[in-house]
Image 1 (cartoon, one colour):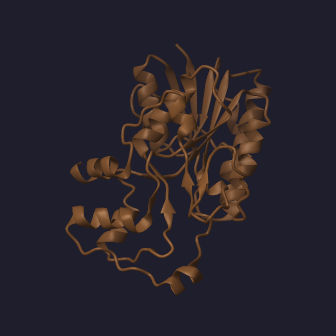
Image 2 (spheres, one colour; image 1 turned 120 degrees about the vertical axis):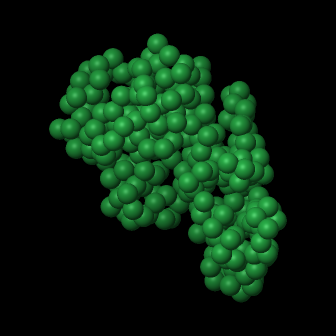
Length: 282
């Protein structure tokens, strides 16, 4: 049995905690807000960015999974969640004399600046020019350069029950960019939790993994498929001129998941078709 701390415990962290608890581990979910966590997880209410609130960490922590997210889309919120948070937590663990065997930091494929539709993997340059990508990279360095054995997981766009932005775009008749194609990468929330569980228990892991499914796909392809399932008209296309003015903002890339697959992970939902079918049937 291991003691696992899920720091910044939201939806995915809670799902991970349920899985780990079923495996026989003791799991604490650390978050600012009150309220219950799924049994038998234990709630530790604290602010990750305030050192004085982290003096009550459970003893004997074997592993940490950092799943905190920013409260808003601005630089201050990203710095707080992805830089100050992990730094303060690592300092609190060190001050308590704790040396967990592993920490996993949840990052994003937005750390990549590539926007030409090409392929990227864990060894590709991560040189985002956006404030969000830069803060995520800064947080990755805090953890990878820290005192604990660390893994960074760069998730693509997360979808699933309660994460219906693309479905709403299709229902609302929003346009998609067809020329040039805008490649998108995604992962179902259940695969997010299962990936973290897999990497937490993996022997001899790599330091960085891309957490995306097996089918990076053009935006219009996905939206056309969803429209057919929803029984609505296919989305209108933006003109090449509009597409050129809009740019890709670093989102037009195809992410490889070969490293994750080679580690032995098998996807619950290998492509958007299986994943969104489950969402629509649920």
